[in-house]
Image (cartoon, rainbow, N blue to C red; front, top):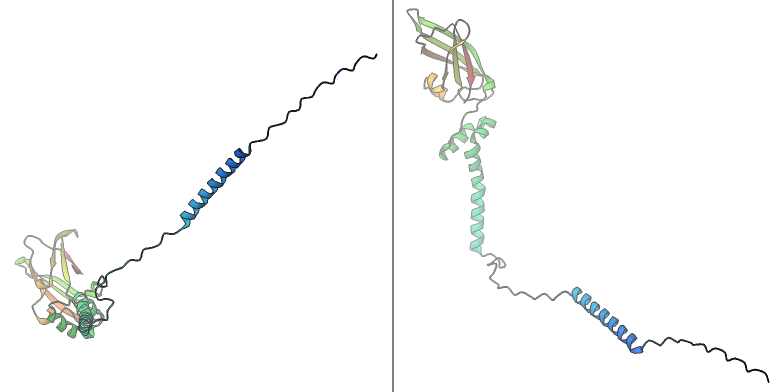
Length: 229
């Protein structure tokens, strides 16, 4: 009888065990919960909190919201008129000299008004329009060589009256070096007349005489200079 056939080897088939359904369900639930929490936070951040309505007392800003009373309006009108009237007075007080220089025909009126305000309108000072037309320095008595007389003629070529200048006299020796120098103010050479106190008129000239005692200085020459301090 024939020999029996050997038995075929048994194959082992490994089947992966299915993932428990509760694990997937749990993971999905956690994911959904996380998304819900994020969405709720995002929505909460975009929500503007309601603004509480503020209630202010009616008299917080005074009576500004109410129409001004007739007395209040009258006070404002009077204050405004006073301010408008004070502007030209302030301009006269602080800029009277400039106004008089630019409007010489108004100088008498401006001077009178400034006198009422206790201010002073000074004369213009234009040194570039002042010129020495003539001058001379001479010894009055040869027996007294230190006693000299200085005569100067100053002319104002400006189209307006201007203030009297200061005069600087420089005495020089035989080598043309400075031997002495002195400055004379209008009070030193003026004769006290109204004409000199009122300055030099437009296109006018004034004569000046100064009697000097040079002491031991024997002047061989001199120089003159006009200026304003």
